[in-house]
Length: 586
Image 1 (cartoon, rainbow, N blue to C red):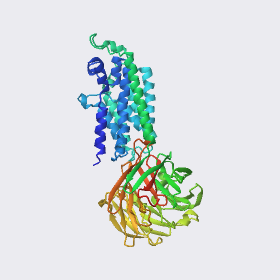
Image 2 (cartoon, helix red, strand yellow):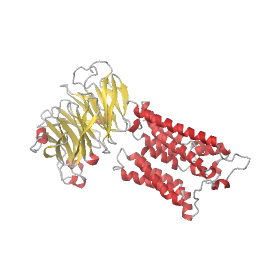
Image 3 (cartoon, one colour):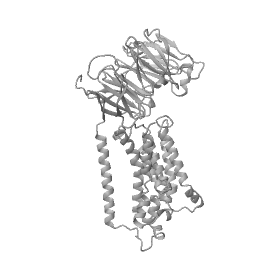
């Protein structure tokens, strides 16, 4: 079990449950705010009773008890070295909202969650929150109905979120999508009595300060007024807190991201947003001087020059006609495997296009089978291997699923030619990913929706053969499989991984000594020792300003530069340098 989930949920709940409105009203009047006005502990009721200044105070405090746990708890867990999955901030937001609505300190009877939900969602979706704020004031200013304005703002938030999210029910967005719906439903349910009064025309309009006289405490009790000096003090505290928060954010953003893992120091040397919303495949050239990133959301492949310091400089944004599913870098070129877009993917085959890393078109389009899934280049760059699912995707009229091998020169320079080698799988083998061995003599094709894989013999690329089948369910992490001739293959289990072949002392050798893995659902990397198996350390993949995290979608490793490139699902590329701590070989 990942203990980060219950720990963050409980901590966020206890913070969100702090009843600031109740505490402030009781401190000033020695009365229970739940017995006055609307009986609510939120900013609106306190503002009606004590005035606008206290509405602002309680509102800001309630916003921050949603905002701070959502940002701070996942960051804290990551800094402490705990697992920090990418959906951890969503869970923190849920905990804070439930804490405000059902606080343990007040017998689980709390507020309606407007301000706390705003703070939590502001940390997750600031643009959608901006739309919610516009909708709120568009209704509130002419009507003065807080309840109606709050529900309108909630609906506007959800609508904006779903309009801006291309794949709201994909794995990386599913938790946020559920929260967006649940937050609106909870908001409306908590306002159900207000809805009834709105329908009857008896709902109270907000007029700060007027209702206060009706419910004012007796003369012997404090009046609820605050001395100007106290207001100055409160303002000073708020400004100090805001300044401290800004300083903390700036300090956090400037802090180097690094981690010690056995004989290695992992240090982030660059972080560059692609601006494409998603990044799914990534590949270095042979020298580690250039990098290609596949961005399927807008059918593009981005290429970068990798500087001597590891920083990325944009080279080209290559637009392709189809939906790109995989890339392979060979020499100065990048081959792009594509499927037809939309419903056309069921009618025609996929294809390969080739471009220079500077963005120029090269070669000729090569047909690559129906429902192509993956593309790899052999280590010597002489051949390209393509997996296609064919009839395994449900259309019996399509060809069988297959591995097709192409001469790289035919794809990269033309003229267009068919495969030089081909092997077919069973009809039910819905092939998904292809992994080549170190020398290219063997390969492993994983099957979708199963924990099985097909082993392939590629000793002769023109005559590929099925060598057997294996069950991946017995392993819970990527590992290295070694053959009798010394060749080895990375077996993928439960996430992306790359092998680090060179020992940290700089000596030469082909054996895989270490693995860098990105487990599914985690916003970070793990560095593992191959023999004997051991976890050496974790490296966090952080979000903007080093707050929150981002789930890796693809990894690439350059042995020549000892650089790891990480493409994240939100569409950012991180470059991490492996530095030896043994003091040699660098």
